[in-house]
Length: 305
Image (cartoon, rainbow, N blue to C red; front, side, top):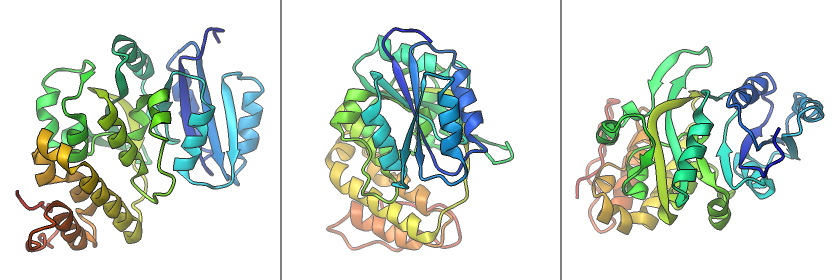
């Protein structure tokens, strides 16, 4: 490993995932980087993760294990951000896999455009058995015009509004400036859900965002959460609507009409009618709530302005 200053710190939260962790770290090593560090936060594992990390770290100076007592992914990432020495911070979740060249391409982007507060890429949904379930960007109609520019990295126009309207950002694709994360005070550890999306929106409100439509990462699809967690996500996203409504309405009005973050959380879920009403109240607080969305499993639609 090079003795030059750390350029990028890679943050990996982990809990009871020893079977998957070696493959995740292998995908980091496949990046063939110089001047990097990997901070793995063992957040209360009971499967031997900590012992494995300590043994690995004795022969890999770039690996820095951190041990916590089950504080949750948001606080685990914040501990790693505080300890990170790199000017840029990349996030990777256990079970996800970076493609070779992913991180080098994003580091080059940030060197070319140092004003970017963060960047992200397209990614592929895969099942636990490796089944290909398609890429993320193809799911969102608002991205079709962006896909026309090819695979190259570039700035995202009206990032706060577009990232609100379209659920694009996979955590394992994000590279962010360390100072921007510190200024934003990291992930909101008080949230029980949607803390990643909430942070990306705060970063997007603070500066420019870069992206690439190229698939650079596999994102393993995990089991769906219970209704209570879904409702918690909806409540967080409704708060985001109230906070960012002026910017959303001015820069990208369709964001208010679609509110796809809320719709995507509610679609196909038993709580979807409740979600539709919550969305209606958030978007049209002075109006009578329109009739609830269809209940036959088809797409929920936000009320039009």
